[in-house]
Each structure stands twice: as structure tokens, then as C-alpha cells.
Amino acid sequence: MNYLTYLSVFDKLTKSQQDALTSAAFVRKFRKSEILHNGSQDCTGLILVLSGQIRAFTISDDGREITMYRLFERDICLFSAACIMNSIQFDITITAEKDAEVLVIPSEVYKSVMEVSAPLANYTNEVMASRFSDVMWLIDQVMWKSFDKRLAGFLLNEANIEGTNTLKITHETIGNHLGSPREVVTRMLKYFVNERLISLSRGTIEIIDKSGLEKITD
Amino acid sequence: MNYLTYLSVFDKLTKSQQDALTSAAFVRKFRKSEILHNGSQDCTGLILVLSGQIRAFTISDDGREITMYRLFERDICLFSAACIMNSIQFDITITAEKDAEVLVIPSEVYKSVMEVSAPLANYTNEVMASRFSDVMWLIDQVMWKSFDKRLAGFLLNEANIEGTNTLKITHETIGNHLGSPREVVTRMLKYFVNERLISLSRGTIEIIDKSGLEKITD
Image (cartoon, rainbow over all chains, first blue to last red; front, side, top):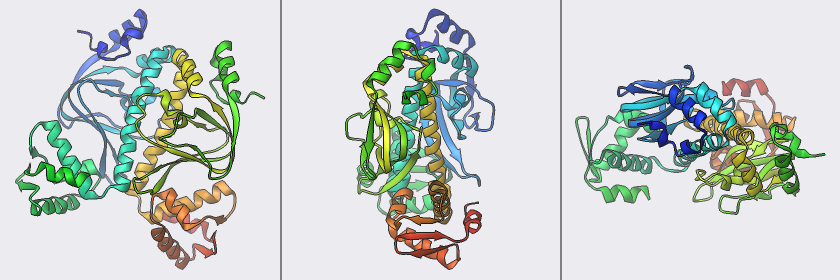
């Protein structure tokens, strides 16, 4: 099984380009919370998620975090190969949010094919535009949406990803996703409890009124 | 004078690609405040700024604005040709911040060359990565920087762009750049007056202590 066929562009490459990518690519496993890439480290390579869940986030000077986007099976992580483009002037950290298996395409090989292949360069463009759209959505959220809307949306999204209304997640982790202090998360969760939207117990948040949360996000 | 030679990639295109772009491109003038492009309108084309100043911003549902980035002479505006990429899923509005002259490369012509030219596709990648970096900087600002830092930084940047310490700009316009209500801008400007960093008169902000403002931004 050549996982590179997951890339929709793969059959538009020449045989020798396909071979170059195939022979350079390798599978790597990451444990939950392991770092795949961080801004200051060397250029890992392009990452294709085979299984698990990946989180891309930025960190402030004093260690606060906010999630930029998350990647799931068959998603591509471009910024772990940031060195392939000169104009990427920002640091992003990428970790495994769950145990993950990924295909790594080393940066220099990917870059050398991209330089001569219009299809691969255009494909890369589309991947970047897609992440750009994620980040524009984030700006819209942090600029104009009140925190209750963002938190309700986050809980619904988590329930959707996990396929359960019982979320095992700490208030601090939620804060790191949303770029907010833990106390702010705790206060708003308690407000949701009073409104009978959720219930809290040790390390668990139970969604009890999904449509109530949905009403808040509107 | 073929303005397309401003594109660093131009001499890496074939003669016929150069000709296709050259014969399709045309110069347009925009008056200050005129809209070059907005998210819901048709796909204007790629814009190369020849003179003047361009502003790209987003608007909230209730009409509030925040500046994403600004473009000056020889900068490229990619998102005025958003239709060349499927994955651009956000709306951006682009206006002339000062009277501007731009070269428009119609989207369909640019796209048709980009589809077959690895150099042009890679060039487009670099332009997008550069705008992506601007937007990541913006997230860093709005998430982690207090408003006094952002406002001081904005005033210093304006003085730098205009080449003067006397800025003719309204509090509302500043608010639209920074995504903040006018009253918040006015309050902070008055604080800066008390600190003897600036002085205010009708429609004008005078920077009187540049290094004081710089100290705030640190």
C-alpha cells in the first residue's frame, strides 16, 4: 500500500517524481502529546496523517497557547515543512493530540519535485489556502465572537469528533485550544451548568442540552 | 514599460506565457476609499500595486472591521483573485487607502498559466505564504498583546509609512484597522496624551515622544 496515493495529486506526477517521493517517504508513530514539529526545530517534512489526530497551535512569549487547526486522517500538514517556502515567517507547533501514525515526506525531496511540477505546486497552494481559511475563521472567532459562543462551539465540535457527549478534557486544555486562561473557562462552564446545558464531574464534561448549546453558537 | 517585469518570476516563464499575461493585463486607477474587491463580488484578478496604498480587511456580521495587511508599490494582492484557488473559503475586502494605480491580471489568464507553470505556481505559493505570515502576526497581536501596545505600534507604523509625526487620521479609522470600537481608541489616546506621548487636535494626532511609544510596544 503506497500511502502517497492518498494525495489527490499523486497520479498527475511523472513516474520518476512518484518514485522520488515514494522512496523518500517513511511512516512514523507519535504518542499522544508528542511534538511532531515546533517552530524553532529543523524542518521535519510534509506530514500526511494516516491515523490519529494532530493539533497545530501557536504559543505566546509567556507560554499561552491557541489552536490554529486540527488534522485528521488523510489531512496534510504543510507547516511541518515550513522550510520549503522562504516566505513562511512564523512559528507553529504541531503535536499529536491522540496517538498518531503519519507519513513523512522529507522537505528537500518534496521541494525538489514541487519546484519542477506545476501540479504539485498547485496542490501545495490548495493545501495552504485551506489552512489559511482555517486561520481566517479563527480571526473571525477571536475578534467578533463572545467567549460563550466560542466555548459552546468548541464543546459541540469535541462531541462531534469524539462521537460522545461525555468529554474527558480538562479546563486547562480547553483554555489552550481557545487561547483563554483556565479560570475564564471554568467560570463559563459553571454558567453553562447553571443554564442546565452541561454537567461537570471530575475531569469530565457531560453535554446534557445539545440544542441549547447550538442556540448559543448562533 | 511592461510592469509585469516587476514580478520576480516573470523571466522564468516561457515567451508564450509572458505574452499571454502581458496582453491580458491592464492598468486601473482607484480613488482613495474605492473598493477594489470584496468577498462577495466576482473575481477581479491578481493585482500588482504600481503606486498608492491598498488595504485588505475583513468585516464582522455587524460591520466592524480589522485590517489584515496593507500593500504598497510592487506588492501583489492574491486574494482579489481568490477564485483561482478552490480552497480559499473566506471573504476579504480590499480598498484603496490612498489613490492607487494597479496592474490587473485577469484571474482566468493567471490561472491558466499557473496550472502549467511550476515557477508561477511556486511564486504564487510564496505570495500566499507571505500573506499567511501577516495574518499569523495579526493573531499574535490580537491574542496576546494588550491594546496599548497595539495602538502604540500602529501609530509608529503610520508615522513610518507617512514619513511624518503628524498623523491625519480619525479615531474611527484607527478602530477599523485594529478591530476596536472608536471609544476604546479615544480612551487610550487620551491616556497617551496624559503620558505626554502624543498630543491631539481636530483630526490630527501628533507624536511627541517616539521613544516613549516604542517603549510601550516592547
